[in-house]
Length: 86
Image 1 (cartoon, rainbow, N blue to C red):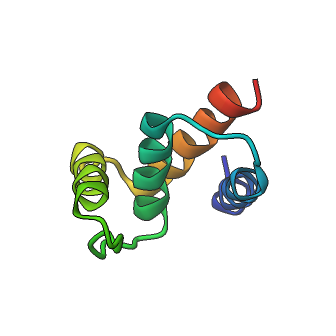
Image 2 (cartoon, helix red, strand yellow):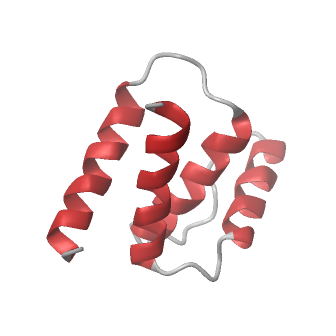
């Protein structure tokens, strides 16, 4: 898959999730969060005001630390297709 096509599909998946109005399971949101951060090369610490949420987000990033940028985009797209658009 070409990088432009992958990026466009990723951005479409992000837009879909951002416009989704039904509640999503926390574990799915954490996976999406980790993939999103890696795909965008955003390695800043989680910025929630709640320490427990920061811990969960940091753990999700830690679990996905060996994933490359393209694989993170593909993972995000696959999760959206499998778990949300089903």
